[in-house]
Length: 380
Image 1 (tube, rainbow, N blue to C red):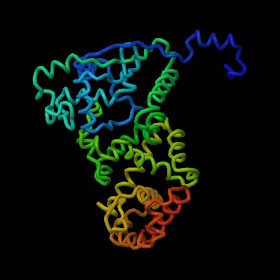
Image 2: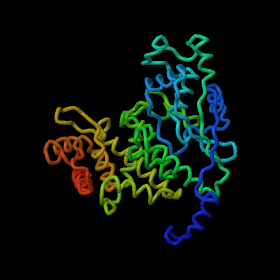
Image 3: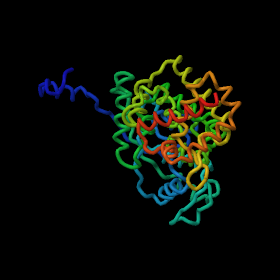
């Protein structure tokens, strides 16, 4: 149908009467033990739809939420989306539901409580029976968006993402990568998450290994991983994305954000052949970088002579290594000279500034890639 200016009032009213993009919803209340059972037994709650952010509540925030429930303080409702009849995913309320699950499964030890400080250091099973029963009768309200008016998958995606974005206009603002995760879910986004969980990548960046701390089946994430600063706000996925987005220097134009956004948008539904090629390129370059620089891969000494990770250095090293793919054996053979040469180069103020990411522009990205490419080529 044409633009709004071409429609008559009668046509617009008919669109409204037909339920055009109107959400059907109902409201239910659930006891806390019911919520636990629904998720644990996988009856209907998908706690981690692919467009959701990662868990960002720390132990104290989760504990205070449990305290609010115990005190019967009103809490916001959760929002569920009916993906199919009697099949649901969480659109808003993931952090609250996760806190409830962790507490009931004795994976949350209460901390930082004020009104109920006597419960600090206790899990659910260690709370007195009357406290447990008090919590068991508390309820969480849920607004359920029903599938009855959904026409097809495209319409379903539009509705749930529209609602998700409107629900998240307040509260903690999504960062750029969390937005990309929400807006551009698909094979490419899945690959970013997969590669961010590669054991070698996690080791290099000081992230607790996904394999040891994360269960995708039920969404369990250890406290150690959940509180990691790169993992919790999807910065690890953004690091992986930067390599893919900066490989083709002809595409490095405009703001860094737009470069990353455009790559996600253009390749959201990459086919299996492209996904395979991207995975191979990333893993090969990562392994070569580690073989050359070892535990100092993507690290640089700051002005206080302390080692620190540098995302801009990661960009330059990874892209340069790929450009020298046929000379990787020589790079590895000369690794001591390569590291010494890099350390000497960054002693120069102008090189240090560009390598650590100042300024953060398309021109600067190209320049730092050129610097590292020239440096590595000497030993290849």
